[in-house]
Amino acid sequence: MNMQAERVRIAAFDASDDASAISNRILADGAVIVRNVLGRETIDAFNREIDSCLDCLDAHDASARTYMNDAVTQFFGPQTRHLAGMAGKSAVFRRDVLCHPVLMGQCERLLRPNCATYQLNFADVMDRGPGAKAQIFHRDDGIWPYLPRLDFPLEFATMIALGPFTPEMGATLIVPGSHTWDKDRQPCPEEVVAAELEPGDAVFYLGSTLHAGGENRTDLRRRGMHLSYCLGWLRSEDNNYLSTPLELARTLPREQQAILGYALHDGIEVNGGFLGAVDWRNPLDLIEEGLL
Image (cartoon, rainbow, N blue to C red; front, side, top):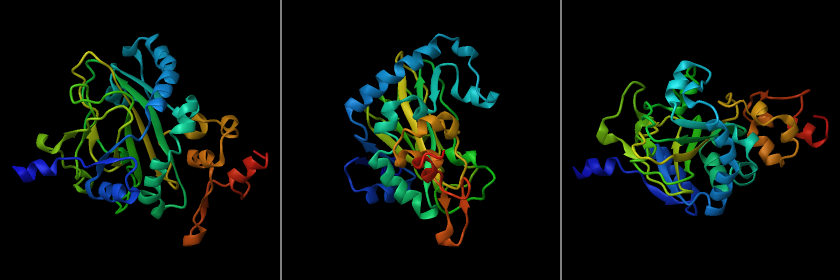
């Protein structure tokens, strides 16, 4: 019994802890909790900024809201207010979250060994209301179904709490160790852990780790920000060139332009080619020179 209890725990770190210790544990377990990733001032400023966007969603009938197909519509459900493309919508996100050093530290360790550059994959807020049903267990890297199973991560993902995350409110359900499982294996109840978080805490996990949003059994809303990064030679889940159009990208620091996918993916050093060129040049240089 003790061995089973130990197996379903999620290791917890503080954002100030050694980045390699965190990444090593993510690779071993598939997921960790990291406390104090974002400070209270950042959380409060971000929530204030996106409140008006979420209120606009309330002006429409949630039950009529649809996405790109019926499966995605059912996945989120009518009780979830869902706001995507955060880099194009939030100045606080761009300034304080997009290239956060704790997140970049994990990208360097988990993704950089298998790409020339990594990029933002998806950034969205999910505000799950009372009655929101539990999601099906899924792997985020399932968005690339035509790749064979590889022995390195395609994606580093996070769920950052923008308010309290409790099991009753539908805290993210994590299945530690599932990144090593056969594709079709499903978790038993005793293999699932709810990631209990305070505002600013996060659960870090691999794209290959099974997880799901839990059922919200309270009369409160549970707000979190899903944020993920992927290898630079993959197509990102969100179309960041449209979510963060060029006229906005021109105003951003070069590091932010790069993480949004505007950088050249140059594989020449490993006897490969390059991706994302414009007139055979790095788009970042062309933007800097005023040619884009």
